Length: 249
Image 1 (tube, rainbow, N blue to C red):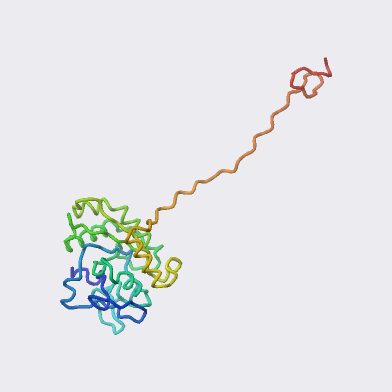
Image 2 (cartoon, rainbow, N blue to C red):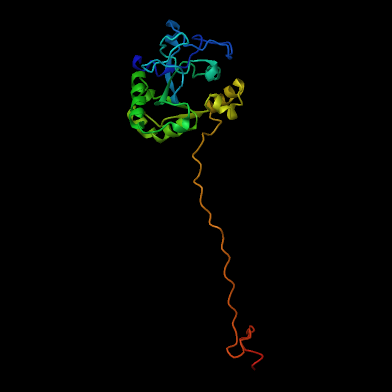
């Protein structure tokens, strides 16, 4: 997996087994050492939309505040990026230790500008990562998507992914809310709220967002033209219902 060390990471923060709750002062680095051997897994693969906007060197690798390139730093930057929300959400869950990556290589903080121009190659890259993880066949992972766009794009390509990893059955794809500050309207900027939302999604209690139904253009109703009254050809008086003109009778 070393080829992806500057683009991906693992759902472990601070220590291999973390029991204390996370906050904005917690250590959010990926720990190292043999203690991780029994923690890291590919039963779940977490997929974000695109790479974070942390500081990077000329080769595009994440760098620490001291300027050193840091492998596996994606999703493990600082409380400024709300990464402690992620750590707290998955602490003590079956997801702890799972592989994390992004769908798109594009580095853009505005998700409205994250395009799908290279999605064929990016889906192929995701499939390659799953092969390297051994997450194929009967070991096909549960895919957990961060945010609506990631979920919609992954589900749109679910068939390709399933065939690419020779999944033995239908893929399980979940959507959890994005953890960023920009999504505060959902998690209200509260780490406990975000944790609760993620746990509800993992239990299947929250339905993923679906594309909005296309809005139909409704044409304004036009009033029917009033009927033209029948008139007597002799005196031009309006004829009664009988059809006979009383004035000319």
